[in-house]
Length: 271
Image (cartoon, rainbow, N blue to C red; front, side, top):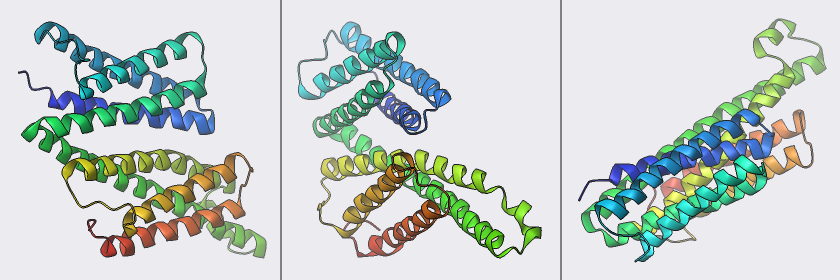
């Protein structure tokens, strides 16, 4: 049998990037992000279709005869419908939510495959863990830079209020730009962390590790997600800007540090 493990990995990574692009457009009405997400999703469809045709013509197997093949075909149908909706109807929110659901179906397919493919499944589970950790660390890096921007905003706001330190103002940057950059980074980091948490749960269940929903690091990660989703709610729906949202972002990042540095050492399976 042709080794196609790399294809699953590639599809998952590109699919995750597409979902993140649609999320950025969902939050910021960013047409460029929407276009990039569309082309990434088109690439996912092409790779999925290649595998589908391989299954049909090379292995003489229409992929609906078992659970994990059926999930793959289901995910392919969702991607197909999403592309058609995006192309002919331009209903962006529907496309975003459909693709988020489609990504979850793809993850379920990989989980089922890992449970039924022996050594190949073990290798796939190991790579899910690597992707989980990588996405988590990338999101932490983006949250950190966002926190620095908020800190710079608060410092400049204080200097302006006290009418001193003018020589530092140009080096700190414009207040509006600092605020918008901080928001932009959180918009990218939040879906990255969400995808990381999803993959982490999948890894825990498919690897046979002792996974507990009440593990302190697991709970902490979900709380971090909620904290940053509240940030997005306050920013987008309640229109919080400037000093108030920068203070919130600073507090959110401090909790993230507690989760990363302290809760990880108290966890039963994180390190």
